Amino acid sequence: MEEHRAGDAFFIFLKGGEDMTESLFVEAVRSAGARVFRVGGCVRDAFRGAAAHDMDYVLTGMKETRFCALFPHAEKIGKAFPVYHVYIDGRRTEVSFARKEVKTGAGYRGFDVTFDPAVTIEEDLYRRDTTMNAMALELPEERLVDPYGGRADIAAGIIRAVSAHFTEDPVRALRAARQAAAFGFAVEAGTLAYMRACAEELQKEPNERLMGELRRAIMTPSPSVFFRVLDAAELLDVTFPEIAALKGKTQPVEFHPEGDAFEHTMSIVDAVAAATDDVTTRFTGLVHDIGKGMTPAEMLPHHYGHEKVGLDVLAAWNRRMTLPHTWMKAASFVIREHMRAPRLTHVGKIADLLFGIGRSGLSMEQFTAVIRADHGTLPDYLMRGAEYLAAMLCVTGRDAPAHLVGAQIGAWLREERIRTLRKILAERRVDPFYSAENMAVLSRRIADIKAGRNVSEHDPVEVKSGADVPQNEK
Image (cartoon, rainbow, N blue to C red):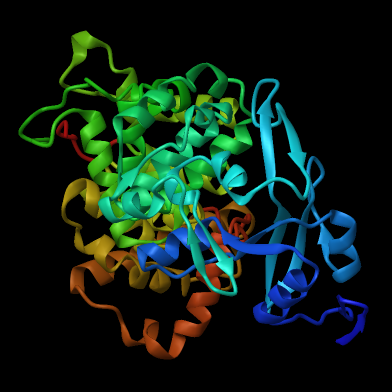
């Protein structure tokens, strides 16, 4: 990095790939007569006592041309208004200029934006969604700028809109619900009213924005809070009607003392979230009983055939919002199998289930997290499913008798694998041949199954749906 003074100006020229310290960045901005503030999530999280994931800065009193002269290697990313990436303290940060916004049309793009050196930090903070996100720290003193009471709301665990401008970007309603789930905060009544006012415009928002909030919400410690807050704001049926449809769908109380299908689903998604950080697994917990939302009133409290109906509901959701392929693959398997998975007695169907888990994109641990949450317990063949699957995978098409060809090899392979599993289940142990010394090979074969590479004419084990034993309505 080279630096020199020209009159009173302090110029910094960054060579490609080099970054600077925050103190040097602040000195450069202030030497040019401008002010610099930390803003957004990093300030909010500091007062929450949480680690900041991103660092964002806002400048006041500076023209864009002046900034570019000071930091010629800053990367411009904003189109409607200038936002730059600058490397500070070894991380890529966002630097923007204080701005004001005026709503001119629908959606998050319907704004006229004003940015010039005269815009104050208070005006910039006013356009933000909630008070906890509308604080700034002026540098280098770290003087708090908190015109709307964000610090007090964080201390009280409250999510509060800065102003009626909250409704100008309808996805803010989902963000407020998601942050309630992430932080364990409550949404105050006035903000819930603003959220309700977002209903019409939310229906016009691009699906990718809604999906982005759904993904983040599923990854919070308590995903159920996200859906409960949306329900309180009368937005659940607007945003996720498949989940809203579960409300009021009663269930047999002996199996579900927690309440209707919605309450059951909320308890399951939270239990799965406590067991795994995998977003796909958490989604399968959310949708495992999604077919119950379509049960006719005259059938309640029973939900016969809700697995098949659930696949149709999931397909409709996918047509509406384009769910990730990995979510669809895993969720389809869980919806289809979650009722019978812990109740199998026929060894062949147990083998098919274990191979199906391998192809679903879920690990044995992830699949069983959903089943355990739903049923409360696991049978031996699921608790030790990874071991049993590994043992069966030791039998390959290469072991088939030489006189067998084509489909005969596949049929032989399936029967031999079932025979292997039957022996293990009878003995309640895994033969040493299938244990530690072979696990490297077995792990690779399991990876092949998960990647879909196990399906061939010599390895045609298929998952078969349908009841194995009479299923009690749960």
